[in-house]
Structures are given as C-alpha cells and as structure tokens.
Image 1: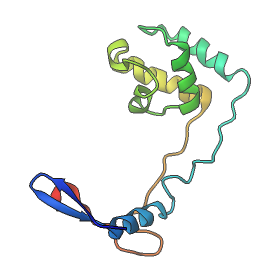
Image 2: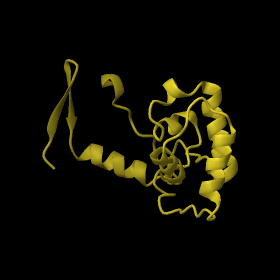
Image 3: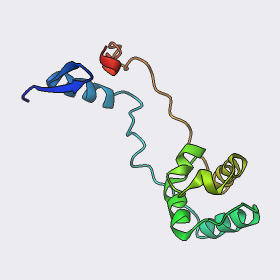
Image 4: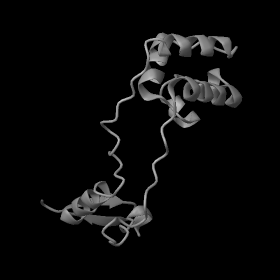
Amino acid sequence: MAPCAVRQGSKHLLMDGRLSVQVVKYLQRKPGPLEKQEEKHDYSPSSASQLLERLRGANLGSELAKGELLQILNLRPASNAQLATAVEDLEERFTEDEQQQIVDIIAEVLGRDEPAVYEEDGEDGGEPMESVENGN
C-alpha cells in the first residue's frame, strides 16, 4: 500500500500499512464489534401489531409514520440516540420523557439486547492501540 499524507490542521499524518494493521487488530478483538452481525431477531406475527397498539395507547404527542415503525422493527433501538436514527425529527416531535417511553415500549414488546462489553486489551494480551486524535 502506498503511503499517503493526510492533512490534519497544520500537521501531516502518515498513513500506510500500520493503520490497516491497527484496524484489523481492533476488529479481531473479542467480543468483536461485528460479532452479533448474524444474530437474528425473530418476532411473533403479533409483535408488529402489539407494538403499534402499545405506541398508540401511550398518548404520545405525535404519530409515528409507517416507515418509522418499520425502522423500529428492523433496528430495535435501545436508547434515545438509536431511536433518533429511526424517527425523523425525533427531538422536535417528542419530549425526552416520550422518547424514553417509546424506547421502554420497544424493549417490552420486542425485547432488549444485552450490552456488549469490550476489553481494553485484546485476548492475546496485546497493547492497546495508539490514538491519532488531535494529532497526538
């Protein structure tokens, strides 16, 4: 791979094979960031209608569009930040309490994933990766 210079502020960072090696090491950590990629979430046939009924019964300040409901079913957001990726203009349409209420309803109806725990060092006992943030 040919080295290339990346301008960051007034400093140049040299990016070559070292960056690729660091990325590969990061992706090989256990549990890996993509480890649950193949995990499927099968819902019962009534899950979508039950979710819709619960959200309608929550007396929210705004209705969710069909596309937003599909996104919620696909993504199963577990936080307000994740919910914002599925619902357009979330902060303008819903209060923080309503946002949390939506997330709680999603968790009750569709279930919740266990949060991933990442180790500082890889299982091989290797060194933590160096940071290139802020030119350091």
